[in-house]
Length: 139
Image (cartoon, rainbow, N blue to C red; front, top):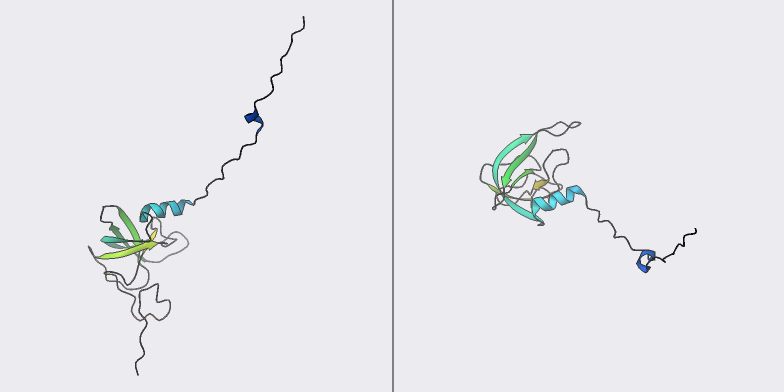
């Protein structure tokens, strides 16, 4: 006995090619930085502890870092660029993104020349990074 097969044509939406959504590529570090700085260019921290840390494997140095907190209580670690500094407990400074690459867990830099963190003395080149004003030549 022969069985009759009924062929049902496929629905129209099966035949249409759907556009796949483009994947949103966001790097992990940028997400972490946005969480740390709360999508702000700079943020003020109050310093809890000043300490010296050593970098990851191929490098060796004694880097000055700071552990501080925002007004609402979140704790962050920041790198202090340049040489000597005079920070101590409960002094304030601004931080921005772009921490030292070879220091684990440090994603922000302290900004020189703001609040209690003074600029690097006797700096002539790259002054904007280290918070030094241009010396006026007087005759």
